[in-house]
Length: 262
Image (cartoon, rainbow, N blue to C red; front, side, top):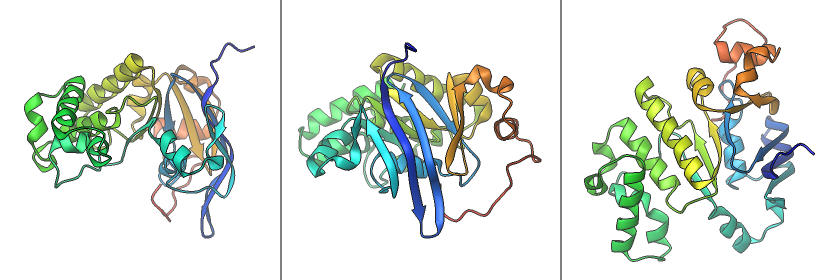
């Protein structure tokens, strides 16, 4: 008995390829319920591909993915849609709809599936805006009028709109200054603590990873090659982890051309 809670997300020997390019090559990873895990790896290592496999945007060629012990490949369309309702996703570069005001971006799912009147959906979106530290009047602005940091907050508000129990965040602080990075990461940690959500967050900011995430997993050559507490990184004895975290140009990780966005 380890005392660990059961795995919310479990991947076993997952394989994903694009033609002859094997991106995930027997990847295994467990993430317990309520945990906040940073996923790191060099460019084109497959981090975004992994997230897209988790939400079913990319089918896998081998292995299995389980959510709360249920293998997602065994689900029919209705069951898969119900499962996806439990996910909140923040995409790279926020992926907001330029033609929609902020509140419709946040409440997009609620409005499009017709489960709420527009007035009610707008009020719910404003509550989420408040939760991520933004003023109600922001609701009627359009994404183009917002700064990068504000767009990140709106994207985070959209991700938590339906109170998901799993949050998948793709580099939520990419391109932000250190102050905004700290603000966004603290928001994520606070929201996860308040809702009990399980968080898997890709990050390329090693300083923020050390400071803001209690646990980390490293993806390299299609596999998780190290996973543990962030406090253990400096004593891990893993040359790949050491090179990535400390940004060393020389080491076992070699630069390679990107074949597909990952």
